[in-house]
Length: 452
Image (cartoon, rainbow, N blue to C red; front, side):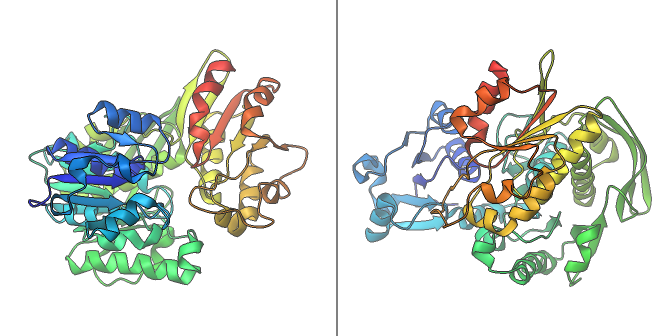
């Protein structure tokens, strides 16, 4: 694909989307190297796979063979600041530089692409779909936004792949770089308003994404309660976990973390589909993945086998327990996601007292949604709020976690620093602990589970 380029340098290689691309090119025998701000479990895995990574923004650390513009492609993520020395050096020396989404778009044109978009749920749906297709006769490649519980990676590759599954990220309008033959939109809600400005612009971007699929004569599957937000410029299908749609479940039974249901697929019925995972929104996301798989042409028995063998996604309602405490870790970082996570926890473990730990992600998101965060967190019995994880943003005056805390029942909420969290949890009576956030709270979860 990039025959003139033997080397690929990733600026921000530790991101979940960037790392799947780095793994792909490393697998394809390109020379791959990169930079990231901090060493993480993921970057350490990349290093073990043979990819050299540096953690200091220093031009002298760029490997010599990657300093030749004729044979090096540079890939970066929008999270990298404009002041980044390495990226500026590559620019000044006329290297070919592309955003992650542009590179992903080029890759997905080599196979029929299935794009999974939505404000919420896209990581789980795309990962579930990837497993369902990969274990079937169809096979697939997949560039995922999470670590598959089935494969312990965010990249799947098969020489006989019929499709490439891609998480279609709306941040920075990245998903408009893709040209899917088949697409799904799980939800359309206000988010990334620092990029879009208002909800109308968000809706317009999702419509543009749908239109690109329609232009390829593909159907767009959309969650039923969001279908009114999209114009039908082609075949629009719907799915739902709770009401009739083109794809929906009937005769749902749930017991001990296991769903058994019949799947209505347009005019057909698939009997006794079994899902061995807890969580009502996991269930909904599997309905979405099943709809995509069936539109892609999967055999019904392959679908049933794929769903039955799903093992989930890291940090998506990820369940662990010890003798006395149930732990749930989730990437939830939007009010709707927090609400869904806590409602799923209540459903899965009725009667258990829920202690929620939430690390807000981004000052802008906190400013836009602090009231919604407070309402959602009130579903828990006890709430610990960590400081805001800034990611790419600078602080905003007056925007702190206290904005959220003031919207939560004061008898149940406490502001706490990261360094003090484990001790505060030790002092608490814990039955069901739910940790949530898209920042670095995940690095603390193993310590919490070990020491409590």
